Length: 251
Image 1: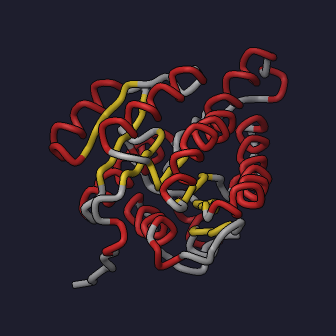
Image 2 (image 1 turned 60 degrees about the horizontal axis):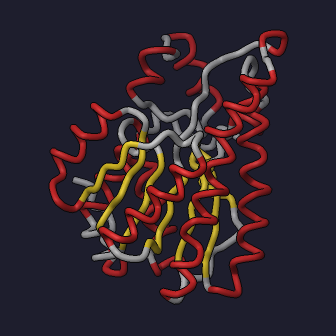
């Protein structure tokens, strides 16, 4: 049986995860709790969020939050810090990757998807940075995607946002580095969440994926979570302003 790492530096650390109720986000919450962290997580999906929190017990704090509401984001970050202690790990995971055609994009759709896929990452970082500075440092982990590198069709707004996450990550890393705050981007490939399997996985798409990947296996949320744990822990203390691709060698 494969054994994976434990990180003593994550024990009792206050962690905040956006989009933590389902998919990769839920795996992140579960893995941090297993490391002994105190985890706050935000999501608009209240039934899923409350269900996950109930399963995990006192170590997980679910805060219903519409990530498009910047004021609500700041309030959620403040509540997390008040309940769990200063947040020294932020994981900006939440996203929506619905397919859309160029001709169908309206200004309203553009603004809404940028709010979900990009804007919330900046404003959560803004909210937790003072507490990280006061605590002597921290780790911010932003989620991008290989989709923009591969020019995946039929989601131009999503690709734009996920490419911008890389620029945001480097900007935050530069400006927050003097306060010992590290900022990195995780860049996942096709991760087999329940949503991805239900909506898009077919025998043909699976065959094409394995032809493209160096490693002929599917990637799962736990694979991503284990990378995030390392980036959150002190073991990665000098890693910042970097993009960590986890895609089985697809790109």
